[in-house]
Amino acid sequence: MKAKNSAPVNVHDAKTNFSRLLDRAAAGETVVIAKAGRPVAQLMPLEHAQGTAPARLGFLVGQIAVPDDFDRMGESEIAETFQ
Image (cartoon, rainbow, N blue to C red; front, side):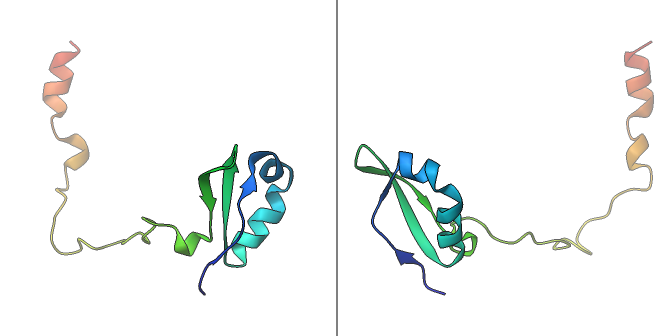
C-alpha cells in the first residue's frame, strides 16, 4: 500500500481530531502536523516508518554458547566484595 500525503494539519486540529488522524494513518495516509504553518512531524502507517525492522529472534543460534554456570560466574569474587 502506497502512503498518500495530505495538506498539513495544525497542532490544535491534530489534538482535537487525533483519533481520526490515526484512522487516516492506519488507512495508508501520511499526515503532516504543522506548528505555526511549519511542518514539524509526520503521522504515518507503521509499516512505512523508518527504522522499524521486525525483531530477528534466534539469529545467533549455533554461533554462541552460554555456559551452564552463567548465573554463578564471578560468584566468589562478588561474595568477597561484600564481606
